[in-house]
Image 1 (cartoon, rainbow over the protein chains, first blue to last red):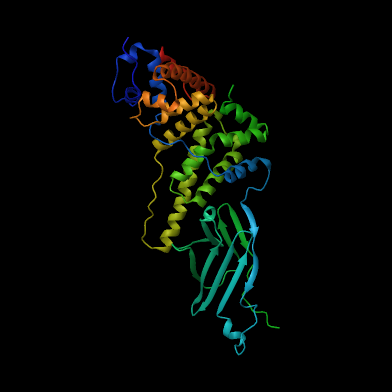
Image 2 (image 1 turned 45 degrees about the vertical axis):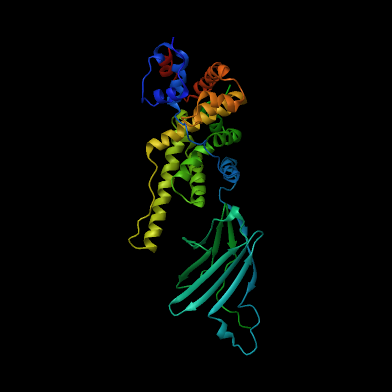
Length: 185
Length: 192
C-alpha cells in the first residue's frame, strides 16, 4: 500500500479537486477524507458564542420570566424650564429652548430642544458609555434614531416627544415622561 | 453518551427548563453566526437571536422533526434577519429617497456550511481535550499546514500523529453518529 495521504492531499480529495488511488485501498485515509468532506472548514475560524446576557435572556423564555429586554429608568437631574430665570429674562423668552439632563446608573443623557417655526428640533447625546455600550439608539414611538459619526443624535418633529427610550446594548433606559408645558404658579 | 437533539427536545416538551438551556447553549454560536453574518447591527442581531429562540419556544408543540432542529433554527434566524433588513431598508429609503441599502441575504450554501460547522464544534466539545486539540488543527488549520507543523504545535512526534489522529477521528465519528449529525449508512458504504 502507498504512503498515507498528506493533509493537503486529503483536503484536495475532500473538495473533489483530485482523486487518489490510495483512497481505494486505505480505509483510514478514506474515513479521514470522508469526515473532512463532511466538515470542510479548513482555514476558517471557529464560530463565536454570543454575549452571555443574550443567552441568559433566551434561557429565561422557558422559565416564564419576562422575555423583554432589561429595563432601567433614568432620573431627571436638570430641566432648564424648572430652573430659576436669570434676572431680567421673562418666562416666555425661555420657552423656545429647553435643556434636560437625565441620569441612570451608568450614563447621562443630555437633550436640547429648540422650537422652530415649523416644529421642534432636537440634539441629544449619551455620555458615559464604555466600549461595551458603544451602540446606542433612541426610540421615540416606532421611530429609531441613530447617532452620527461623533455620537450626536439629531432629529426634528412637529411635536416634542412625551416618551423617549434609550436602547443601549441589551438594555432599555426609560426616560421619565416629558411634559412640554411650563407650570405657571 | 452524548445526547442527540431529539433527546434534548423530548426534555423540552416535557417541560424541563434544563433541556431548554442545553439546546440554547448547543446552538447559540450557530444562531449568533447567522444573525451577525446577515449584516445586522449588534442591536438588531440581538433581537434576531432572541426572536429566533422565542419562535422556537412558541412553536415547540408543532416541531415535526427534532433531528432537524438546527436547520429549523438556521432558517428561522435567516428569515428574522431578512425581515429586519427589509425594515431597515424601508427606514433608510424613507430618510434618503432612492437610496438602496447595501445588504445581501445569506446564501443557502453558506447557511448549510455554518450548520455543518456548528455540528462539528458541538461534537468536538464532547471529545477529550487531547483529541479536541488535535482535531481542531486537523479540521481548521489552513490547507498549507502540514502534519509535521501540526505535530510540532501539539508537541508530539509526526510519526505518532497518524495513529492518534485515527483514534480521535473514530471517537469523533461515534459522537457525530450518536447526535445524528452524519449519515451512518453513507459513511459505512464509503469506508467499507
